[in-house]
Image (cartoon, rainbow, N blue to C red; front, side, top):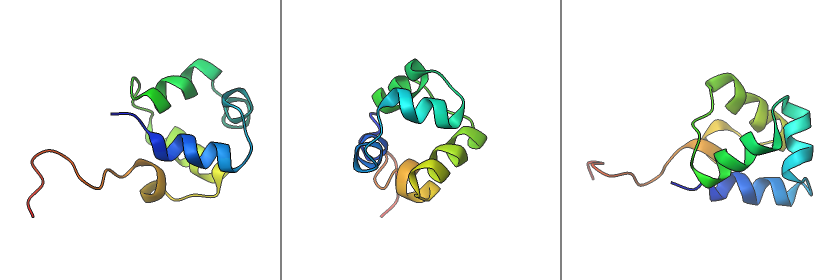
Length: 71
């Protein structure tokens, strides 16, 4: 599942994938794969991304509606 919330937060901070990657200590490809939904980052990386973007884990990584969720 694509992480649109991460991409939107990054763009709102006026950061490129490369700039965010430099801040959190990963490659641009890693940020691109996270945004594309092709990579599950570690909790530590999620926290670093949240700090860099002034967001919470819930803001960027919590899936509101997921398959099998009980109403």
